Amino acid sequence: MLTFLSGGTGTPKLLAGMKEVERDFAVVVNTAEDVWVSGNKICPDIDSVIYALAGIIDDAKWWGVKNDTFHTHNRLKELGIDEGMMIGDADRATHVFRSELLRKGFSLKEATEMLARAMGVEQKILPMCEEEVATQVVTPEGKMHFQEFWVKRRGEPEVAGIEVEGIDRARPAEEVLETIAESRAVIIGPSNPVTSIGPILMIDGIRRALEGKKVIAVSPVIGKNPVSGPAGKFMKALGYDVSPEGVLDFYRGLIDVFVVQQGDGFESDSTEVVETNTIMKTAEDAVNLAKFILNLL
Ligand code: GDP
Image (cartoon, rainbow, N blue to C red; front, side, top):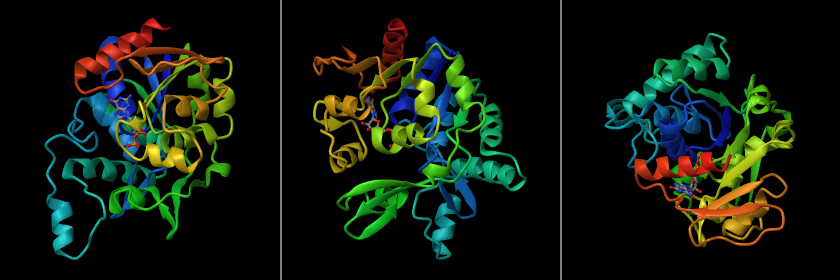
């Protein structure tokens, strides 16, 4: 078995390719970007992982359900409620399903398992923890939730730092440590190191669980830029170079093999750096990257 650590865009692309060539894997997913909207809990990264594995993700945007409609969202707007983020009708059904289970006393881990099963996903998808934790972006205007920074403000404010509120008291969700322990390797997908993988690694015990495991990471930064999203801005704010070297620096001491874009290779004393095409524009690109990673094992 393999375990992936995932955020909500880059790694889900890879997972969609991986399931075509290897089905025996689990995914530990970031929950620090979760928010309650209109009475329901949205777990953006878990939702994207489930949708990607179920083959229903909107692969133009890499969030939400393909061909979704927005009747409820638009009707709420007419009634004077701006949800602040676009929530499709089918996507909302996921949030209702989850939130109903949480209100009935099920854990997030159990609710995620039931959701994944209901959508025909056979892999184990685990939230990183049960506790509510929240990534706050520190800006000159004050702290704002990641979703406010990224969705409402389109990532425009200057970034002075990142804080993950509540992470100190978070414990790995049920089965996370066992799943990692049983895996022959852990793969850190091409996700935002600071706000997607960072919070997972901050949870007491998870970093330790990776020690002694073969850990492979894929760079989300190509040349001097991330493929998408605010990773560059966040890395710079924390003092890391925005480059594959900077990503490796962020994961210092943790990874054995680092997969970078063809032409981005460099020498490292601690880590084997290998090159291939890591840009997943098509399903075939993702399958090829998945095969490349399996060959490293
Ligand atoms: P978020 O929760 O939406 O921020 O999702 P992730 O953290 O999983 O993904 C964001 C990261 O994925 C960004 O830093 C992107 O650079 C990276 N990414 C997105 N698509 C690709 C891709 O096709 N290849 C690679 N190598 N990285 C990608």
